[in-house]
Amino acid sequence: MDLNIFIENFAALFEETDAQLFNAQTRFKEIDEWSSLILLSVIAMIKVEYDVKIKGDEITSSQTVEDLYNIVKSRVQ
Amino acid sequence: MYNPFSIEGKTIFITGASSGIGRATAIECSRMGAVLFITGRNPKGLQETYDKLEGNGHVQILADLSDSLNIPDIVDQLSPLDGAVHCAGFTNMTPFQFIGEKDLNAIMQVNFTAPALLSQALVKTKKLKKGASVVFISSISGVYCSSVAGSMYSASKGAVNGLVKGMALDLAPRKIRVNSVTPGMIDTHLFSEGAITEELFREDIKRYPLSRYGQPEEVAHAVIYLLSDATQWITGSNLLIDGGYTLL
Image (cartoon, rainbow over the protein chains, first blue to last red):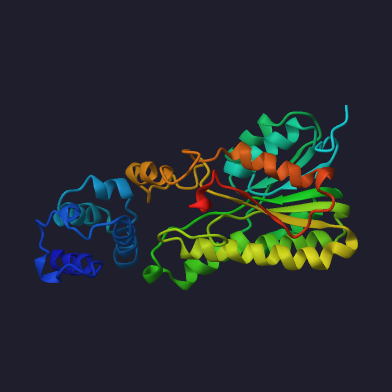
């Protein structure tokens, strides 16, 4: 599993925010555009791209994109 | 005592009885003196519901409606019915951009196709008595509004409401009534898989004028009304139970 591709997939869920601004340390909940719809999109993206189920609370308790990456990575078959 | 709202002695078939609205409907119907056939796909949950039923003569049938091939076997086990309540259903909160054919088919199968074919099988086998009442649990979502990431669920429930109208017309000559209820958010475990966060729930509850979610028993009581002889001239209708949500 590749961190940079994960960041790209994550950034693609945002319409208004420049994809170049995302990196492993991005504190995603502080982005203006962050919303419940994007939260649900993150869950769906992780399911579609990585076949991993993640809970909403696990996303809200994560701080950075890398935190999320680590959760997904630990569950990838 | 004069009580046109009674369902005492009626034989009622309830799907989705292993949890949530189906379980509450089964328990409340039994408390009102009905004799029940309950189905569900979760054996533990179904048994728990069965154990909570009041009165005697109830039957539980373990059945999974995700496959229509299971329908004939369910129908074979039923006695002639005064009512049928379709509660089996699930949701899948996925933003529209991510929905896929497999998930769409799965939700349509359980929320729409199975209850439609099951109802048809009840009619064909004459398991629904003359004057019987069929009730579908629909939702405000898909009929009056939708929710973020709720397009698949809304589609399945919107389809149910269309079905109810057509069925009501076609079954009217047999004096079989067909109605639906459209609840707002009900406190069940439907959302316990965790896509929704506590924070989102707290925000959502604020959008209900009566400032809380509904209880499954409150849906059950509306269903009982539609099963009772008090509603003998009501067919093809829909009862809104949403704490005022759709007023805003």
